[in-house]
Image (cartoon, rainbow, N blue to C red; front, top):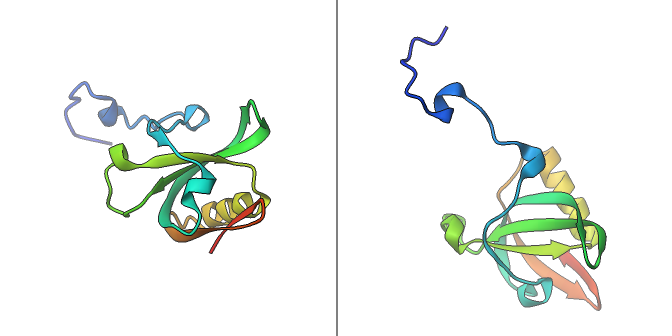
Length: 111
């Protein structure tokens, strides 16, 4: 039993955010602008519907691991290679992860 005094905050109630309503409030960039740049994968949201199609991923990145959220960026992807890597990193509970964006034609992938 918790003996702390209820301070009226949500933190006291230990209510976690609703993961089904996750969103990233930061500037958007594109995969093209990230080619040959290294950055940190912070998080992602899968299964998003956009005007370009269904099942897109929104990827949250930072250029420096300790950057503030105000400096974070997000990009949308439908790259099977990137989606696979993100799902594997999540399964291993291994975020954040340092990567470099690469491209071969219209294929985008991480190194």
